[in-house]
Length: 409
Image (cartoon, rainbow, N blue to C red; front, top):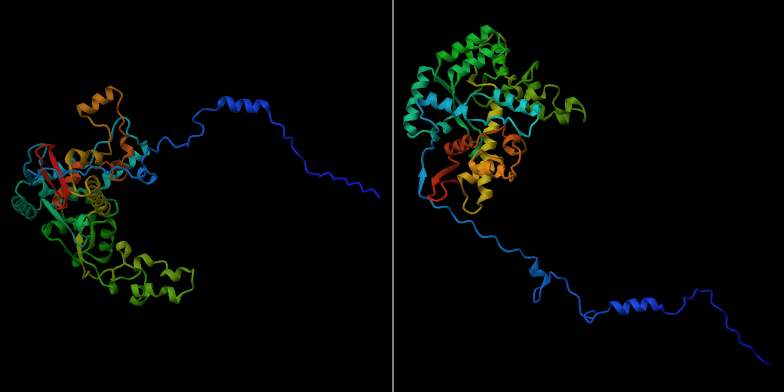
């Protein structure tokens, strides 16, 4: 018997094993004697590892400035004749003028800047006076004489933090104070006259006795911003407006409201008068009757003093941060460099800047894009520097080579 073996064909698709002559020709034509050499990135040099390439060269340390001598009082642009003239001089040099061209701000923002400046109180800190006075003791004696004469008044703000947040005392010209009272439209003419009469009878007093006003008059003056509490009152002195007893409007009642009321209700957060119950708004003092005289002492104040203090404190802190960033080790920087960084690199009027602009090399940013105008409403560098020097935060010294130096204390 003859057996025949038959191979079963596979269903797999088999490719032709023939080589393409054109492909082989291309490979042979592009070959080079360096094709078999190991390839390496151009950036990797001989004898250098990738770990060494990631290391950046160390920046040279900033050398300390030469200290020839401390500047005890900052110079002024013109001669000063007394404390009153000095206060007017400081007021006129607080803000920079809004640029007429290329301000980087639209009309709405410019209006906001001008209104903010207009509403600030005309307060000059005592520290600012000392920074521009050649003899601080003589300035103190003249200030006391003007206080007794009623030409100026003093505002005391205690407990305002420490360091850059310290304000201390401020001076206000009496004519500016009376003008603000006269322009206020929230007070009656009778109350305005009574308030000014009380101020004139106590020119040097930092507090006003509450017996001079009734409850309604005190509330009106505090709402307008011309009176404030002379010291922090106790918890029992604050009542929610309309509360019948201290237990229903005290701070203890507010703190326990969350456990006594349903979650999510208004009563759980203290009720509708929670702000006044916690002492906010200045209208929550515990007075029993409108006709009875007040037993609390008040301190004279001016409207919008809060934005003024916020602007002052933030400007001082920003100057200190600029010095620290410029020289972290020595914390000192040339005056010109610090001023340039405060202004944000905007175009100036010096001859060098004008020459760069003529050559088409002016790369300065618009004023409205800088922090000086976005945050500080165009506050001048000289004003902030004088405030920081008077507050004991920084000091100026002669370098002998790069002009005036500024050092953080």
